[in-house]
Image 1 (cartoon, rainbow, N blue to C red):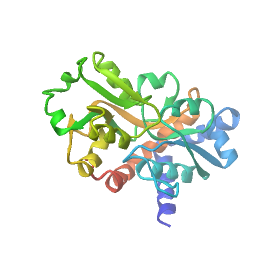
Image 2 (image 1 turned 120 degrees about the vertical axis):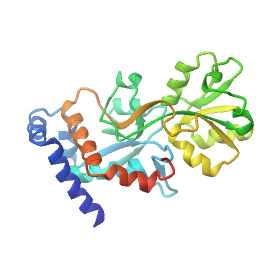
Image 3 (image 1 turned 135 degrees about the vertical axis):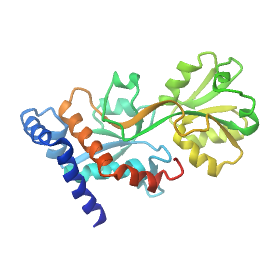
Image 4 (image 1 turned 60 degrees about the horizontal axis):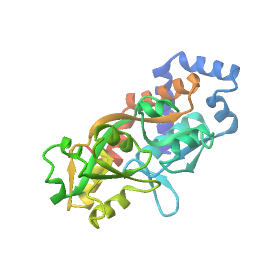
Length: 272
């Protein structure tokens, strides 16, 4: 019942936010069968590409997706009047999967970067985040500033294809990069704790859960905004202005109604 009431609120807010645009979206979608919005409504399901990314996107042992972003995904499906179908993928191929039409949107915490904009489109942001660097406290204490990471004697581990991969290679060209495909932040923590790797790059929002779980770790910078913060958005196929306008209106309604703030308080309380 609570979710249904929220869906009704979002429908009303979406109408207020976009006004006549909603009517324009509907008319255009009917005339243009290539619009993903039209296809989703016709099929009665929205396929959502999703990959684990704590604390934004989590999956329990039964396979259920939950937390901040999956909550937004479910609200979107509710407002559209369709079912949500989560399609598990990995960060290494998540963009390629959207291009190959394996899912309709990327509904996990993906950053809007210039490199990704060459391949896919993005809604307006529903959150923001950057890159941070993590190691054992004794290791991180050796760096006086973030610039000290740009050193051929420093090895930085990271996950292939992530925003942190792109930022690290651009900002620290002298450092030694060790990229791991299809892995997790938990794996990188194990690598650091076992001293196989000295430092790893991760999303800055992860720091707040790492603070609680791993008191032996140090962070640079110790700030949820991190280095080179970017908007976190819904990913969608390029060349579909109807669908993008609808998603922009939907996210705008989430901000306008205070829903983003409520979800932050519920799922990202440690990331303020």
